[in-house]
Amino acid sequence: GAAVAQWLAARYGPIMGALPPMLDVVSFVHGIVGTWPMQKIADAVWGVGNNMLPLWNPYMPRGAKPLKVPEPKPAAAAERKQVVYLPSCVTRSMGPARGDEAAAGEPVHAKFLSLLNKADYEVVIPEGVSSACCGMVFDSRGYRDAGKTQASALEQTLLKASDNGRIPIVCDTSPCLHRMKEKFENPMLKFALFEPVQFIATHLKDRLSFSKVRDTVAVHVPCSSKKLKLNDQMVQLAEMCAHEVHATPIPCCGMAGDRGMRYPELTGSSLQHLELPDTCTDGYSTSRTCEMSLSNHSGVNFRSLLYLLDEGTAPKAAQKAAEKAN
Image (cartoon, rainbow, N blue to C red; front, side, top):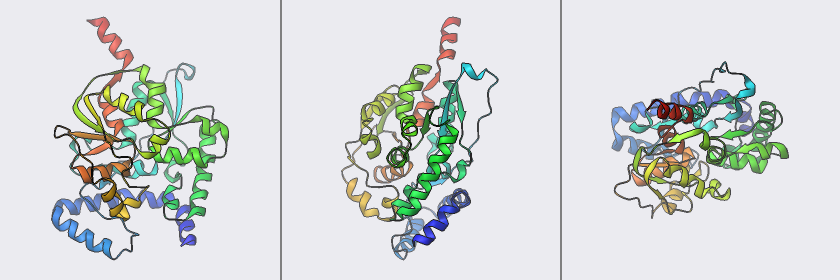
């Protein structure tokens, strides 16, 4: 088992590159056979998988569109702030769920790049990002050595991309960011790491104008964000883009990385009391796997908070120009 994990870690980029097409095939089959037959097939496959295979549900993601590395703007580098953006392996591979029309088929990284562009940030994508991983996928299965190998390689990648921590680093997935803070050894690099809500609240909020574009939404703060004490910041950002925001009272969704996909009783127990207002149309969080579980148990599409923030923001310079014209 450990040797196989190390083999997979050494070939992580090509393996993850194959995941989006596989997810698209599963989504295509779902569209052909329908939800009930698909669930029966999935139950049978999962039943013989000895908890190594994820159990399909109707809110499983389609494949994410490829990451589009932004072109440098002609403005002088000294005039623009920089940020190293690390799209997690989850958001690089997993797109919106089938039927999530509000996501318009766009992946999380497209929404974050749009936000950073509105705030006039120069974005640095780390070299070799297709192979980048914090190692949680191995740790959650007990393969600590493979997880450590992945985390160490990622630390070196980010040291290079950030000029040894001089440039701030943001990851779009809260659990991955929290693991980096725990596992990295370089103190300067740890100091440079930002969770997405934390980075937006600290660095982007004053460079954007906000509008309320949704009526009633739910927000789930992942366990990792709770540990970073970002509960209030996440809700406050959502309130800038929605008229009513309901924070879920659930301490933990039970996903635990991806374990909840393989042990559905974890999420079933954790979310048995998940209740949302009848008027709630959308849910938001900052962990793609948590969002899948929350969607499946609520019947409401949960997606990254970045979708709401991108929908409800505009460059502050554009707002000032519009006010001046009026």
